[in-house]
Image (cartoon, rainbow, N blue to C red; front, side, top):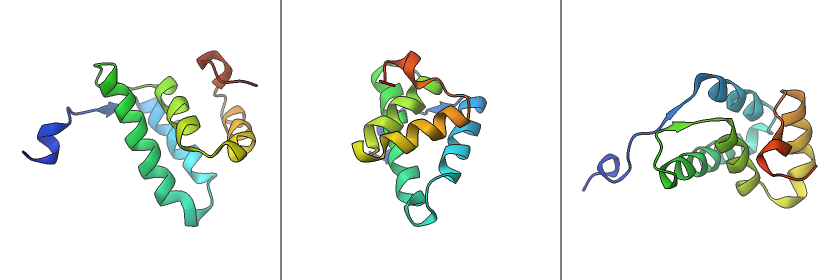
Length: 94
């Protein structure tokens, strides 16, 4: 079975994709590729687990918190606040 046959197609809400791209720009270049892969995989996994096909802001936020080591949550929160992302509404602590 091919890789695409195993995983249902997942698309990204355009506003969420724009925020994702802006968050990625804040990650040091030498970590950016790994971060992009991990966040995309996690966000799309969350969507599939919920039997949906579109990634929204909550999925993006949850994915970033899931794959980012705890010690880097402070800078992540600052970056999200700068972009107007209210991570607290999705259940993440201040």
